[in-house]
Length: 124
Image (cartoon, rainbow, N blue to C red; front, top):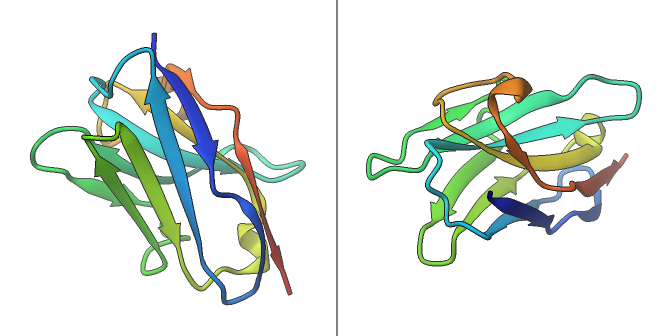
């Protein structure tokens, strides 16, 4: 089983940036994909971005973060990062990383392993 832990969340003003990190333990990232999701209060869990954990390092982004978000992997550290720039108040949510076997996938139920989440709050 892969255990995932997110970090890097916090409070940032609109237009600012945050770098979120997802660290794996128990196993390295042998899954086919690692994804980032977010969930705001009263909202459904929403896909943000995914990266393929293979040599070709393909990425896939939700329309809401295209041009503002960058997902990347560090195989040596077993981490996946999500760089978010030009943050907006509507980006406020708990951000989760997840690992699965399918790429690309925007469906939460195709990711068996999840972290506990990290809060991102963007003030106006």
